[in-house]
Image (cartoon, rainbow, N blue to C red):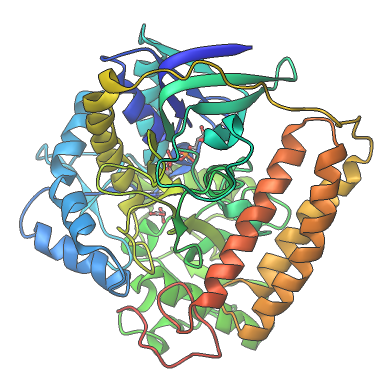
Length: 524
Ligand code: FAD
Ligand code: SIN
């Protein structure tokens, strides 16, 4: 089946929905989600969205904090754009119906998180992302120009490579014409053609065993773009959130927001000793890379499976008012956070790298944009400052929409595209091969390409992955089309890229820490 729209949006998180709402005034839009529309990382976001709202905060302070966290590898122009446009984008979210918590004075209540020199995190209790998703989803569902396709798995971007089998190398004018997508309700692969395509597929967290990311986050967007020969970058910079709830077997890992440390919670050992001050003068509120490494070190030395977050110093009223979701979640597994310390471990949380995108979200492929977590605009450098990613989605989806709207009238539809070639695929009976291989990839990445790396660990990871890659490509040729085999292939592609980028970087900086090059100064 073929269908044609002006704007195709892959992803229904904040990045996809903002773009869709903006372009929908200028043409027909189709929005795809792999699962249900609201099952997004956006919905899970707790802490909030960083923006400069009132003095004594200033754009310059937020810019400096972002650059410091990023170890100076950030693109300063992009940082400046993001932060100077933050106030306007927040106002737009409010105009669209998002509620952020306010003080009695009517001003927004602002929280503080690691690496921020000021209180600047707008939030809605401890479920900010859910509130943003709610407001955006409502508008998208009711928009007459937007078609929503849920449970549609985007497999591959359609480019000249599909029209001309001879083209195998990157070409300057590679153009995107849409995607092949698996309609999970019918099992059919459909050809969705578009003048303009946005990838907003979110993160890659599931290449690791422990992650805060929803299970759909298997790096599909990065893998699709890479296979289409788009430029990808900075994939060595995987952010581990220091404090996910230690609750073995739970997927995704439940996050304990950094805002809790901003409100006074302190990291401690099993014995109740505060340890962060021996690593950094900012203690529990040092940037994430430093805190995650410190926890990793403490766990390795003590042999414990976790450390603890002590929130008992926060007044009960503040816990109930600002952190009701965390309070209820912990209580559901027998932990009363007003009386007990919370067991926590680091978990893969955010990919700073991704598909290279410029200040208008444009990728290296014509008519293909990337925004949100899948994109690498250069905002985060070597380490993302907390709560800067929702902001990045808002700013660059807005900008990508401006660019796409300006160009749409000059883009023609492609006439004919071959259907997906499913020849040679037979029934996949050995499902265990897929599930087992997925676990193997996650284990390799967690053991050898985690918070602390070395040359030998990275080499071992690559050697193991190459075997798995060959086995999986073979399986892929024979398998019946299924989300599982497509996802596995993407996971392997992305894991490979993370290792290759990590091997290429011969220094320790930000989120990439290797014991073979330990000297380089860490972010401060
Ligand atoms: P997502 O919101 O993840 O949406 C991705 C969409 O892509 C989904 O609709 C999915 O179905 C779709 N998709 C993926 N692959 C395919 C495919 N193959 N085919 C079709 N559709 C596909 N950031 C902050 O700034 N502040 C916070 O407080 C914060 N807290 C967080 C807490 C948690 C637990 C997590 C996991 C992340 C948090 N982050 C936070 C990060 C932030 O939430 C994400 O980076 C951001 O929401 C990403 O938005 P997105 O629109 O790019 O992707
Ligand atoms: C958190 O609430 O700690 C997550 C914030 C973020 O990932 O930016």
